Image 1 (cartoon, helix red, strand yellow):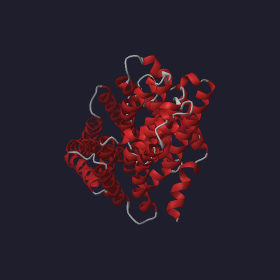
Image 2 (tube, helix red, strand yellow):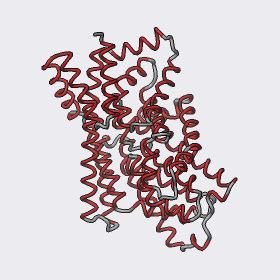
Image 3 (cartoon, rainbow, N blue to C red):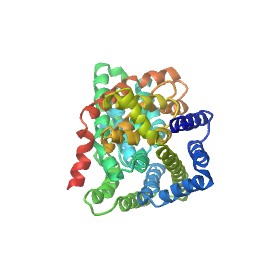
Image 4 (cartoon, rainbow, N blue to C red):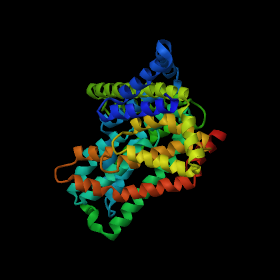
Length: 441
């Protein structure tokens, strides 16, 4: 049996196991170890799993993962997100679509605190969704805004997904985070522009709040503004020392976790329940990601040993004679297709052993490609029929919002994201300027 056929058999077996509902790390790791045992015997199979585990344990930047997850859960469990939404409610409610714009702002801040899209979706659905519906906002506009805003969590730093990509692609986490800043803010700004224009043309979609509801007094407005600035202060306390080279990435993540903990204590919200929930969730998610990374390293090692990447590169560039840009676009389309039934981590782990080396061989920047992957994943999250965010939204939405409403609500936002993806593909400096500027200095 040829190595190409073995690689194809591995890939198809893994996909079959995932479609039967097996856990991502279990399916990928099982296929990797069994393939190694068959190809290289007992010693090769056992050494593969052991060396992958040791490589994971020695990867120092992985310590950032539990730090940022803990920071996000402390801030969300201590209800600081409630204060943020109240701030946007008062300061932006007078604008047509103002609460929807404020929801996007809330999502950006939640992303900077947590780095997971699920957290943004949960907070948006529990805090923003009832308020927007109660004030007469169109239900399709509302669900589209929350789904689009929550997708920013995997692009705006500290993105947990980019940490996973950095591990698999062997790229610096700090550069990837900096590369995601401008594209993430650009996409959020594009969402805001769309909401403002749409609600200006049709104010019934997002009516402005009456003055009586927004008139809370100068002192209260300033208090709410301070509440909104708190996450920015935590983010600055974490990122400024790192950007200036005063601290390492791991040290900055520890500063962020301590700052979030201190903020919750100062506000009198660090109860035993909040602390216990934050620690438990941090442990659960960190372990999940570590198992996934471990499986990905093992799977990638087998693929490297088989030479599957070189074989695929030869098929695309020599046999089919495709242009590198066409190959890149086909990769992005495959992400969107897989995103209809897989989450972001599963997609990355499945195709990273193939795509990441191929992207490098084609002459593209792997930092830039990390941003493209993340945006494409965001689009895949919101693409029917089985987009991940669609099901999360359906699970959290009230009964009056049907599946059809959820599907139709994301169409304009997906189009905005496709425009943003195209712009970044055409102008790579949008993603690369900030990391190159910071690291060169």
